[in-house]
Image 1 (cartoon, helix red, strand yellow):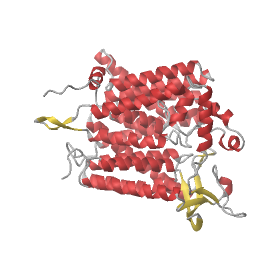
Image 2 (cartoon, one colour):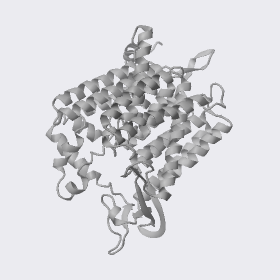
Image 3 (cartoon, one colour):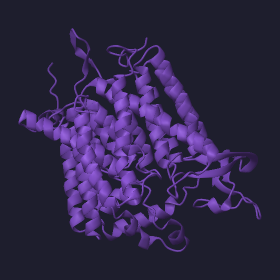
Image 4 (cartoon, one colour):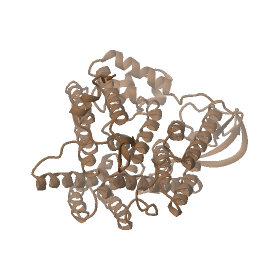
Length: 521
């Protein structure tokens, strides 16, 4: 018998929100990118001025709409931050527009109520606060005080929005269903750009390449087959970010589709089928690992509907087969043009124009970056090198060929990056944030199964879906550099999912959870 946890609570044919709200999300996301255009065509200062002005406009225009519109707009606006559409000086402008509107909405609510709303999940906010305080200490001893100060201020702003403002503004199940639906649609859009640019090749805007296209040759057991296609990252300059977006969209679609019946359910399943090949074309193994973990966990959920469990299990098998075959060099790809070869590529044969790109157990040079990170941590283990200083901290420890190939790259591990920038205590505090979130999620009060039965509870399926996405991100974090409080999609979504997956809980309730329970005989 199928469990009832993923059944819709009302109006199963509706997509989790009203049509005007979806249109509003698209409009706000477009508006948020206007400062980028202004900054590229004129000056960066003009772009920032326009961003602050548009934040006020967006808040006023969306005042009659539910706050979930701003939440979804923030995710969409942040999704293309790491793309080639922005320059280094305009990276933060789209998020600044929507984030500013959210901050203004939160401040106006506090003004109307004459009080500041308490955080929804107080234990998590307290843990994040300790993390920020330690990052402040690392900033004081940073090797680059100006850079670390800028990073720290950004961390405070993003964490305040993600862990305090948004969970108090967006608190209903339908709000989270709306976010999942928008995430699914975002994944479809990103997948479409991957398909189009896989065929069309690189795109240049204002004289800058805004995509990452590479002709590749499919290999079997290390031998070229002559089957050529384009490895594509869509509108992104590296394949990681679009791949993570699409994997998180797959998780969102799994949860969202499991709560629907009829046409919307089939639309969700069709979207899943559409996105999966795009994730494979991007050829990012870290994202494949995230997909394996997330879909495997979803398939193991005892409360998921049988159809959702089967879908998740099939996805897990597909990504596992691809991942294992690539690691075992059963299948792989060669880059057709050697001058476009990435790190650690090797010529297939003398005189050929093909080089090995994927296939085998190679870590794409991460072993050198990890070794350099460990050497840097040994030098400054307590307070680290300061937020944002991961690259200059490890560069002195890259020697020989590694210095030429990997200069300018991060640690490619969230755990090592945190330890490099904030010291080993900073890493332990970050792990403590994740542990607090896990404890609150696992031990929080459940929703009643029936209105008349308050004894048996079930978890909220939208919170379960967000928690599964966080577990999936843990697979990526060991091989890629995430940053709690960062603006890139991966960093921003990690913070938002951590916050929104938790039900309300006070510090007093959290302390009560840790008390031993007395058994009465």
